[in-house]
Image (cartoon, rainbow, N blue to C red; front, side):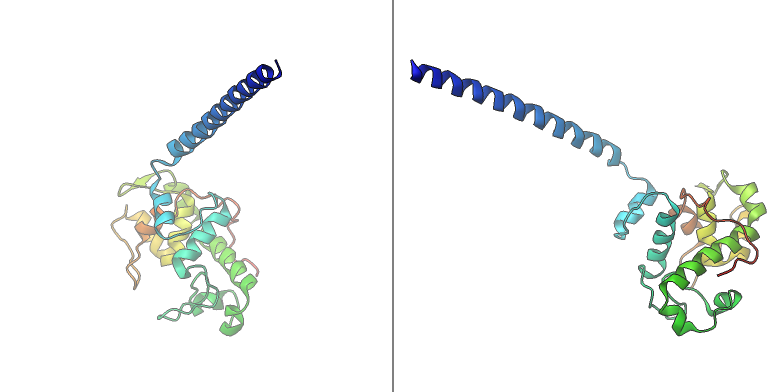
Amino acid sequence: MKKIIIFFSLVFLGIFISSFSKDKKAIVSSNFSFSKEISSVPTEKESYLQNYNIPFVGNSFVGFKEAVAFKESQGKYHIVNTLGYLGKYQFGKSTLKRFKIYNTTQFLNTPKLQEDAFIALCSVNKWILRKDLKRSVGKTINGIKITESGILAAAHLAGAGNVKKYLRSSGENCFKDAYGSTIQHYLIQFSGYDTSFIEANRKPAI
């Protein structure tokens, strides 16, 4: 009698474990399929981030500045490129002088100063391009949907004046830097980030 009871207990336990395992697998499988479905067709921006191993930290302002930094210097604070551009965001000396930064060695060795300078430059560019932002955001130029973050990134690359020329010529006047990067490239790769944090300011303080 005891053997029969033990036998049926083991059978019942086996059925219970099997049922639980199936349910658990079903949940995991369902979640996996859901995640796969979301990421099966990455956007152009996501493909760019994946191809260059850039950490995708969302569409926040932090995501924006880190993506720009990776494109400029792979996010390294101490880099000086072959043209003399400095730091994580590759500032020119003339731009730094605008913010009363004259000691480039101190600049390269002060991450906070570089971060503050990037925000200040975005503020200035947003002020210079304020009319163009109102006119152009949401429009499509050369097949590119224009966004505020794309414009600010392009201004970081080419200067606000060259971005004005591009937007006001409907894309005919397109700047290219010494390494081959264009305004159009930046408008695409840095589109859709939330840069509302940046306030337009003609003379931001650092």
